[in-house]
Image (cartoon, rainbow, N blue to C red):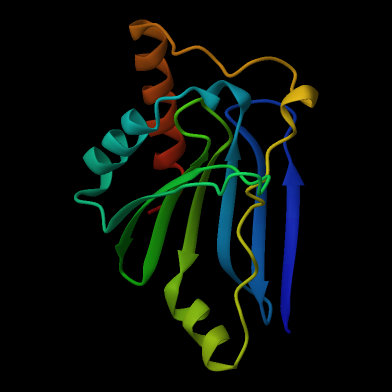
Length: 162
C-alpha cells in the first residue's frame, strides 16, 4: 500500500533504464539497469571497483538458481552508509547477464516494514529461455575492453550520489 513504481527507459548511453520506487510520495529506491555492454562476465571487477570507490563492502552473496526453476543465478554486493544502501547485482555472473545498481533509503524502507508493508520486489530473476536469446553468453572481454568497462562502471557509480 502507498507504494508506486515509475520506470523510465533510455534510448542510449550506459544506462538502459531507471526505476523509481516511492512510498507516500517519497522516493525510497532508485534502480539503474545498465546497458547490454555491461553484461560481460566480470562481476568481480565491478565489485572491486565499487570497493575502491566506497570502501569495504557489507555483503557479497551469490544466490544459486535451483535446477528447473527458470530463475537465474544472482550475485549481489552492497555497501551501507548514512542510512543509504548501494547494491550492485548481476544475473548469471559466470556467463554474463543484466547488471543493476540500486540505491535504497533504509529509513523509508524501515518505515514501510513498520507500517506492516513489504518492499516492492527486486528485478525478476528469470532470463529468457536459451532458445529465445539473441546469442550465446558474451565472451570475456579483452583486457583493454575490460578496463574500459570498469572505467565506465565507475562513471555510473559516481552519478548515484552515494
